Amino acid sequence: MRIIRKIMLFTLALFFTPLIFNAQEISATMDFENAEANVAIVSNYVNALQNEDVQTMVAQLADDAKIYGLTGGPSNVMNPTQLSEYYKESFATTKHKIDENTSYAPIKVTGGINEGEWVMVWTTDTISSKKTGQEIPIPAQVTCFLENGKITMIAHYYDQLNVMTSIGYTLQPPSKE
Image 1 (cartoon, rainbow, N blue to C red):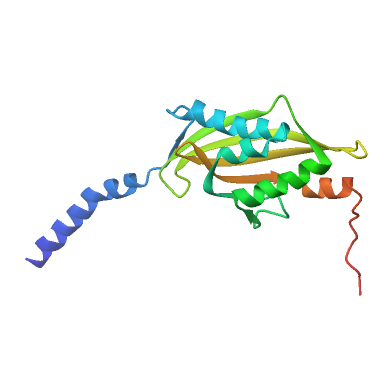
Image 2: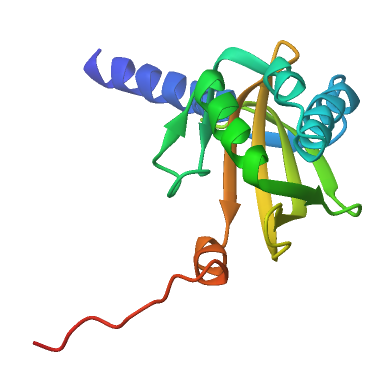
């Protein structure tokens, strides 16, 4: 009787194993129902940035959106109100020009921890000082997560050292003491 139970349990485990592993199957596609609408939302945000239109930028965001990477790295997070204040200060002194060849890639991930609808953006944001005219090109990759027609998360990735050295900061090696 014990052997029969073990064989039955083994058979059931063998039968359900494919169901367990396939339940967490992860897939991604660029062809999904909201793809064009999501790109339009993110594009509206990017165009509003170039046009110094904070109100339109914030209108693309969910009320509880999280924005990473604008102030000192990916661990610093802003909410829409803080983002609004950040860009009001930025627009007072700088002009943003977004590369006309900006690329948008909508992606829908099914399964896993990244499940949901995303838009990836590759661009160069050339900022120029309104006072001096100095220009700093900033190649960037921006990742947006969207839910219910709103951006709920934005992560900015760019070369911060390039920006800092362009505005006069210097990098010094550590002391050898």
